[in-house]
Length: 336
Image 1 (cartoon, rainbow, N blue to C red):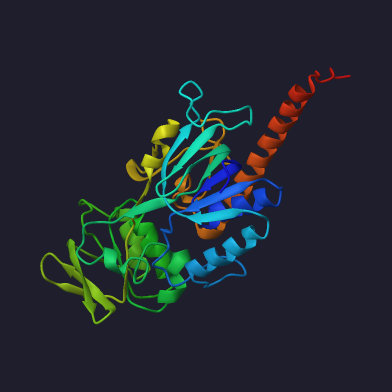
Image 2: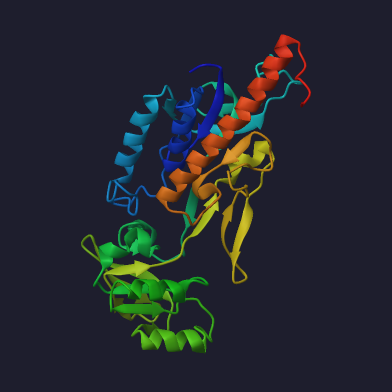
C-alpha cells in the first residue's frame, strides 16, 4: 500500500465497489478496505439485481473486486480501527502540501492518508430477542418480500408484529401466498387498527394473539413459531422487521453521529445523514449504501456508490485545478 490515496473506501460491498469503480475509471488512486462482514452474508442469493439475479453475495463481491482491480484499485481485507482528520498541529500523518485530509488507521496494518473518504460500511441488523431467530436470519427468517418473497411463494408464512410496518409486510407477502398469519407478538392492544383488521380479514390474513418465544426447527428446517403459551404456529418461513443500526464507532473520530430513522413515531433504524450524492456534513466525507439508506437493496446501494464516486471525483477535479493554479503562481482570469 502507498502512503497517500486520492480516496479510501471503507467497506467493500456493492456500494463501496461501485464507488471505487467510478473512481478507478477516472484514474484516481483508490484503496478499498473490507472487513468481510456483509449484511447479506447468510442469504443464498442477491435478488432484483439486474443481470446478477440469484448470484450468491460473495460471488457478487468477488466479481466486483476483479472488475475494480482492472482499473488499478487496491482492495485489502481488514478492519479500520479509526478514521480521523489529519492533525497538522500534532504532526499526525502531516499534510506536506499533498492535499491529504484524513488518516485511516488499519487494525492490522499501517495508517494511510486520504484526500477523501467514502464510507460504505453498512449496518448491523438488531433482531428481537426470540430464541433461535438469529440463527435462521436470511434463510427462512426474512424481512423483505422483494429480497426473499419469491423463494417462499405458496408457502405458509408468519409475520411477527414488531413494528409499525407489520401489517404492510403481511399484505405484501399475501401477494405471494394465500397462507399468511400475522402474530401480534409484543404489539399493544388494540392492534391492528379496525381499518387494517378489515383489510387483513378481506385478504384472508389471520391475526393471532400471543408473544413468540422461540423458533421451532426440525433438522435444519424451520417449522413454526412457538408462543409463550406453548402453542406452535406451524409455518415454513417467518417475517420479522430488524432494526438496522450504523457502526457508529467508525464515525466518532470524524465528528459524525448516527441519527434516528423514525416511522409512525417509532425509531426503526439509525443512519448517517447525507445529501443526494452522499456528502455528509463533514467536508471530504461521503457515505453510500445502507449506512445512509438502511432500507435500501443491493442494486440501490451500487447506484448510490456510483453517484458518490462521481461526486468525489468532481470535488477532487476542482481541488486539483486550484492546486495547479496555486503551484503556477498565477491568478485565475476574471470572468469576461
